[in-house]
Image 1 (tube, rainbow, N blue to C red):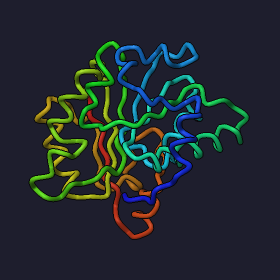
Image 2: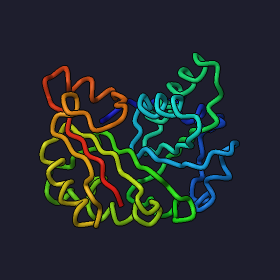
Image 3: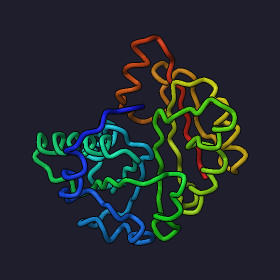
Image 4: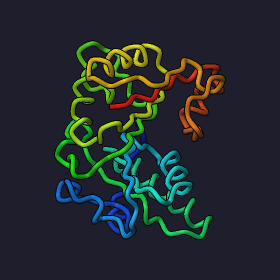
Length: 219
């Protein structure tokens, strides 16, 4: 999803207490970065404007979350969304962290000592052209990287509107040795999550009559 440059985003991110501009230095030590005693640690890959992570983190303050994106403008909007949600609830965002990083190189900022328990991937770029498919966040090559820091029995929650990406992803997860424990081709009529937090894209696609595909894969 393309978004216009926002000159305020970088200064606001750099001034934020829950944005990390040098994630490499926290590899294997992310627990130390959070000012709480939470044990569970989860990721959102490609957090976009932060509507999903802002709701998820606020509703689960006993869990620490790291949300990753590559675009300053997106992260700036995510930062504002998180601030708004937490301020309305009269809470401090102590269990959520934003960072800017290329997810293809995620092994540079996370390892097994971080003990990631769950990864959320929502409506990522489907990269439909054959030569670009290795860029998919659910491609076998990427899944192998996630296994380096995802705990045994750790899970990946994946949602998409794209039929081809979903069908291919089922194969990718199996190739990477993951077990598909739940799947649906129509999430809103066949729920597989305890609670589904609807994203901006999800709402848009649903209103267009496009069914949401989803799965839960376990390492």
